[in-house]
Length: 257
Image (cartoon, rainbow, N blue to C red; front, side, top):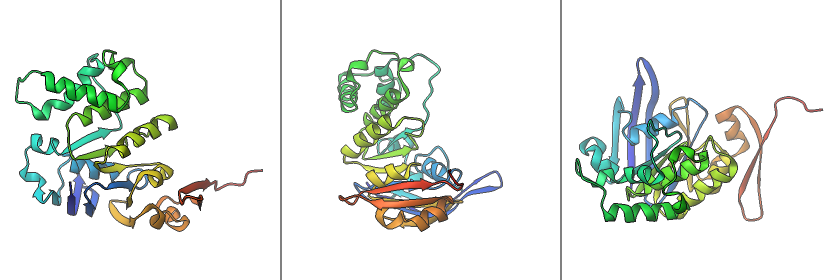
């Protein structure tokens, strides 16, 4: 799976949110999108998975213009795990996961044996197979997000979009979600707030600020103390352990006695 965008712009009313973004997601790459709140990260991803329509620019998936694909066709290629997921009805875990099979079905088709096989496999992948009959609303936040990941897996898409999926989770569940996604060997684009997690899991990072791309490179190339200050206006100390992994420690802007 390869995604290219050229000069993507997005206006909401008279406010320009995205100001001409160029983007290249390579096959089997785990690409992290970083930047401060309000920078346009999620809005850009929403353009990729068609919740928002760009005002200008082009998006292509494997060389085909996104606008030429039906929503069903794009859903067969792109699966999404977003930050918040609310349901008005009390669905079971299995019912939620089976929703991911809808791009494979025609209108009014019922779930069949293959759908259940794929759903059970997805639940096993995220370690939630024992919860299949539980009420989705009764689960913890981390458990719910693993179910949403299983739902995305049932789409059997080549590419996964992670739209800030771990922001409200504790560190255990953040790492669980990222470990699972990393192990899948898919093409992944993920908006990530935690720079240490971005450094752990991403092959490359793209930094967005005020609707513009302001940096691109590997975590080691991009996450310098100078760049972090330019992007977030916070001081930090960046170190590397014996294996080369990056650790970022943020420094307070006030004196601690």
